[in-house]
Amino acid sequence: MPSAKPVAIEPATPSNTAVLTIGSYPHEELESRLGPLLRSARRFGADLHIKGVGEEYQSHYVSKVVRMRRWIEDLHAPIRYVLYVDGGDSFFCRPLGAVCDAFRDLNCDVLVGAESTFYPCGRPEWKNRFPARWTGRRSINAGMWMGCRESLCKLFSSMAAFSDSIMQSGVRCDRAWKPYRRFMRDDQFLWQACYTDPNIAALREPIVVDSNMRCFANVTCGSWRTPPNRDFALRNQTPIARRSGASPGVLHFPGRNRGHVLLAWAETLGLGFQAEDR
Figure (cartoon, helix red, strand yellow):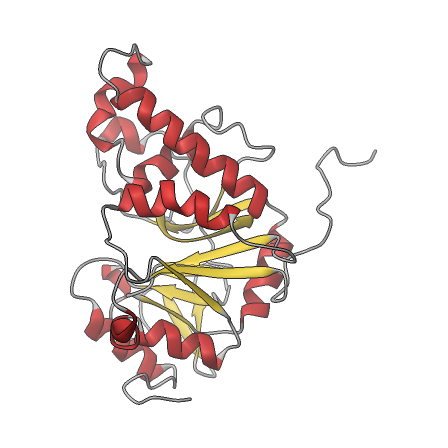
């Protein structure tokens, strides 16, 4: 019996995938602010679309939800897919083609990064909304995601509408969400809400969490030591997720003051971002 899943017109490839990041800095500061990501993108053949240059960064919600939808809508053919990575604390460690291949193999519309930490809401009843994952990474970190352009536009539009419906005074909102009103302007919480309640965005396919680190990996406190470590092995200067055996193409180092960890990892992987590598 044939699958009811809509068939994409074409799979994700480097030529039809835009890599987006946010760089709300003066143009002359981009190299110092986003150095590791810029240099790794050049090395691995990823053409970065840096958004917000020279503009004020108002908040995660404004830049990563409201403006993000507009930025994605403004992309032109042949772009059909978008890969987003946080700018100041991420870098490529494999070619963009490897990320596209892994995304294609997962056969999903929207994929988002995973972690074991629950942020910004750590309430027990919120954690219970997330199904168990054998890798232990069942929560969402919105520092990296990838998806079909049309689905992402609908997702961010739905996030904004949902957030507004809870935040606006005088508007009756779903009682189930009222206790979480304080988180409704946090982009990561909105990703988590749309994942745990697919009816918010009503996408043609549910959001998939990259718990196995097939496309990208969040390097959190348990993995700060350069590989090999608790979560990652090292093979030919490539990180391998121990539990899944996957080799992520983009690494994200969330949290404040993690620059030294990022640079130590880069050195171990043979990328050497301390020096320009044009």
